[in-house]
Image (cartoon, rainbow, N blue to C red):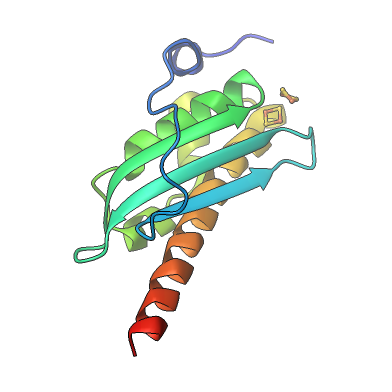
Length: 134
Ligand code: FES
Ligand code: FES
């Protein structure tokens, strides 16, 4: 199958590959798997708790080129956005930008799910912290 140029670019030069400190309560970690193929994606966001703006995003994807490209693009998109804005990121936007074929749509869903689950983890941590301070 032919990959689009944008997929190849993000696959060959993935942005934001790496790890953030999981123990940091301003870091949310999302770990999701794709039942369709067994690929796994870990995506982390570092958020400024004062402004709720995402200051950093890193990912590791154990999966196909489209999954790597999708997470690379997603981390680029969410940086500088608020968590609420990032929450509304749709996998269809990734599909469109990368021109993914139908069999690769679940790879972009993985990226959307990973962002959401990272945000949920961040919110959980912040809520727990507030509860402790009471
Ligand atoms: Fe898993 Fe794409 S099917 S690498
Ligand atoms: Fe399964 Fe891409 S994540 S083929």
